[in-house]
Length: 213
Image 1 (cartoon, one colour):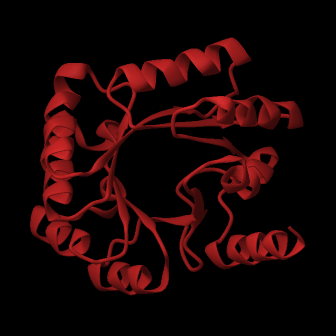
Image 2 (cartoon, one colour):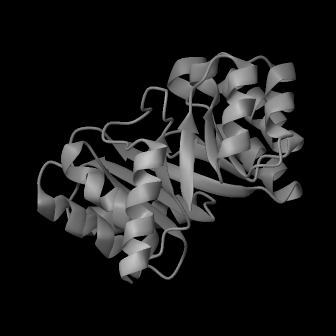
């Protein structure tokens, strides 16, 4: 499944995008939506991931906006691994109550750690309450993708992706390796992470692969 990362600041445009995709991540921290708008967006029937990075909003605003998204119908909530446990616990508790799956995410915009560290990061995500561990790292060379793909040997749900030009291949093959979804950029919007492929392009590539298989 392809999850389109949305940072659209106009609510009506965001809703139009949701009408056309199979799944979406709403980057609340990049949209500037207030609580009322968040409730409206996450009531849409398309499965959504609620994401609000604390470095942009602070923990108090992050909590209030993510909780509103969960209570309004988000299927997943993404909490970065750096958020202190005492700050994330309330979000996780609300998510459990509403049947919203918890993603604990790790991002490294500089490099891909070695294999031992990658598996340790995944273990930490699960220890912090993740039902899905998301690990996105900068792929500077092809072997970085290989290390990330090795994470799919974990028996628990994981989404592992390489960022940057070298990481594009990992975004294409991730669903074939066992990821529940991979991320794409809006067709007419900016990418929210380095190396994101436009939704229509990624969908076409994945359909070609499926036809071969």
